Image (tube, rainbow, N blue to C red):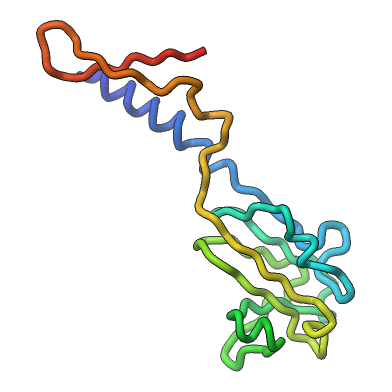
Length: 154
């Protein structure tokens, strides 16, 4: 029985452990950073954002900031009245929930000049490297009605 518990624990760790370490850091705008005159829609196109990933906004302190806003404020470039901007110049946001996320710069007219980002965050996915080549098969051991796992690992 103890051996079975150890096997189940190892199986769970092998299956779900890599999810914890598979988060990615995305430098918003790559080398350009968070700035005016950059196409953040093009930057985000083709990227997959998942829960646990991080967005890193790099910019010169005092020149920009980052507000998390809703879709309406994003469209209208409206700075929220009760929001507090991120202002460190190296702001990290951990993506904690699924769905659309909107970010703008609240300095002057930077948002209307294109300094805004919208992304869609997806649930965590199993990396393909840990998916078994063949699913486990069930069988019954002799003299018992309890199922027994057989793994056919390549």
